[in-house]
Length: 229
Image 1: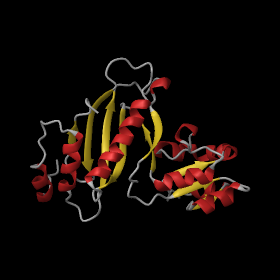
Image 2 (image 1 turned 90 degrees about the vertical axis):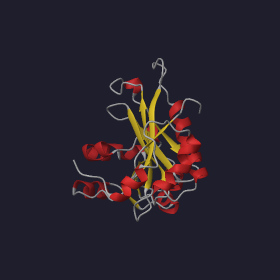
Image 3 (image 1 turned 90 degrees about the horizontal axis):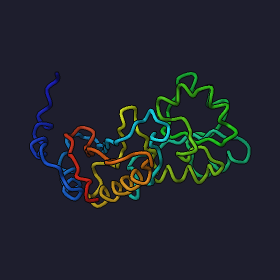
């Protein structure tokens, strides 16, 4: 087991690993945990009391982070006809159809979000096994299969993210950057928290949201008290 570096060990002393922090306490503490020379990503991990194997409990959705993600999002749009111009005018990084699919077959994956018009889904099906495991396959529930490609591009560029429960019932999401002010971190967290609460399956009984943690890319995690939010 690798030993943690000196910087990590120093900031780790700032975190009480027994304590469950309020959101206000967490967002004030988080910037103090920076150790990297780059602007670290703020990450949130939420354990949900769901069974992802059940279709109705496969929690998934989208949310727009008010303060943005702090990241330059590369958007690839699969469309044709007049929608091509809509996507380009909205700022899409890559726009095309069959030729982009061929590039993906060759190993190209230099994008963060995939948007497609419904008529392109059959074409994208050829690379579903490549895009699916990476969370890049367009889906109507995520707002990434749409005729309004221009609107979708602008939203994802502005800070719209997708959340999805994994195989063990956990949601992992980026929440911004370590350089964000505490108020911005809190605002983004509350938007994500509320979206996940609204996505609660009706079949889930009892406690829905379990342990929740917030951390930076290279920092110890802070456990959050979400019971009063």
